Amino acid sequence: MTLHECIVSEDFAGKRLDVFLSDSLGEQYSRTFIQKLIKDSLVLVNGKCISKVAYIVSEDDSVSASLPEPLADAKLLPENIPLSVLYEDDDVLIINKSSGICVHPDHAHQSKTIVNAALFYCGKSLSGIGGVLRPGIVHRLDKDTSGVLLIAKNDMAHRHFAKEMAERRAKKEYRTLVFGKLKNAEGSVEAPIARDERDRKKMAVSNASHAKPALTHFFLQEVFQDPLVSLLRVHIVTGRTHQIRVHLSSIGFPVVGDETYGNETMNKQFQKDFPLKRIFLHAERLEIAFPNGERKEFYAPLPEDLEKTVNMLEL
Figure 1 (tube, rainbow, N blue to C red):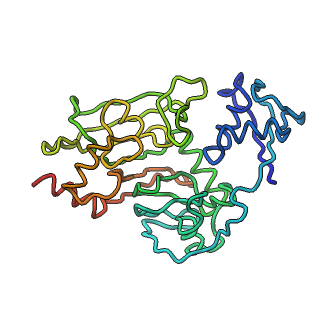
Figure 2 (figure 1 turned 180 degrees about the vertical axis):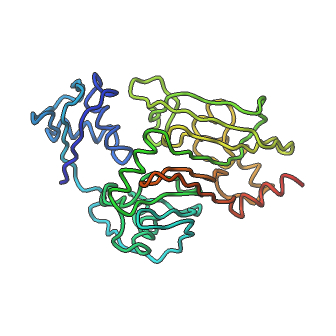
Figure 3 (figure 1 turned 120 degrees about the vertical axis):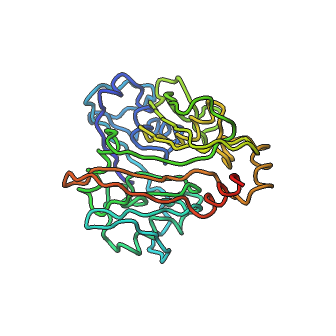
């Protein structure tokens, strides 16, 4: 068992204990799993055992949960997987992540992840704040999403970069291709996101009390007529799971190649005509302040498969 300890913030005061722990622990643990922890008397609030999932927490409550080691049988080993390094210093490693590789191990992928590659490349120089399975991981990209990814080399840097992102001072921009033609040159989607109650593997725009605020800005770059698709530059102010995919799909413009939130028929037709074998989503730019106060910008050009798709659309 490992002990997870946290303090209830003002934002979560008045919410249920299982809702607060779900947010604190992240997507690695399902709500059902967290509720079982509570019912099994493995959660303490201010040192007192709480077994009711609907217990209401207060600001500054101290909450601790005894957790089984995730993937206890997995051996997190360094693996010699090539990394495309954009920048490196004593605090951080910034890479251009390839499509098709997971950032960290999970139950479906226990090796051949960015974490395995970073352990080989950096040795023991990775922060431990991300936990046993996520050393150095400050933020994530989905398996099939490519682009700029930041990895912290020590705990001080990890805390700094995580705070920059949490307080929305970092700028994260993506490029994506969506089905349909946008009416305006730019726009925004501001809608809370939570787990889809009908399918816990998915996220959804939600009015539930535990849904997290999410804001996405998009800018139209080009419209192609055959098929009718739009190339967008996207700036996410928040960093919710699947945020771009969920927001764009919610307004009727699903990302090309998205098998989870997209249109199956349109995806199949697109793949017949174009050699795109994954989602068209790329983290193109990251601008963030370093611990010394200097802001730096990192850029990853469109990878070959996405660039080829755009070129074919322009013909």
